Image (cartoon, rainbow, N blue to C red; front, side, top):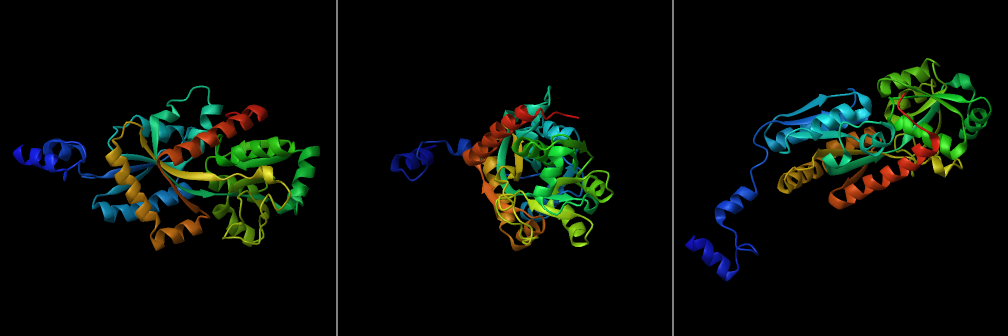
Length: 324
């Protein structure tokens, strides 16, 4: 205590005089055991691939196993609820997309958790979606789709109720007046398969899952919903270029922990995620997933999510979007 008091007196310790024992306790070592990533969607989708890519890097950095588990269902609510009710110690992390927190509270009558139960570590990246149709529809442009949709209606697949594709159908309806029959599937892959099989006219789905079929001539691309053209398919126009800027929509990929997680642990995770996402192999993987790095943390991340939730709430109220 004599040494601690001396350091406080001369001002070379912390700004406030804190006993050395208490200081050590305020910054616990992390991690000291395996970390679990919960992905709230089925395997194989962009959020799952991103989660596993980050886990591979962090496993080496942490010198601890980083395990990815898929807890899909209820538009991401099952996985998010599991994390929200986990111990707030940083060892259970939700890795998923924003719609679980920005859309689901507006379409589910009874949410098993509140968005405030989760604290964002980082809004890692964003991505637009690809509007694509089965060639049998005969649609060549976005205006073709809109014209047909206003007269006889069209059908869209999605990765499930409350998914980005479902939201896109509501945004489409609100912006254009097109009549859309939304058909939910269990994941992005079966939603794309439905377009290929002409079970539906088209869909607004993750670009990486659609693009191989676009290149094979089995899906006709009409536009991407991002603000800029996709690096994976620069020949496809944006919705703004097609004259329908109101259709702009980007999916946010993020990581969250229980709200009561200590700030030093949150900051340790933020540093780890930022370091992982700055590495060339992760940047290449993000490009392959059509993801644009965002890197928002703290208040900036919370505000971005809050603004989206308010916007989507208005769209959902106007269109009557609901769980099917």
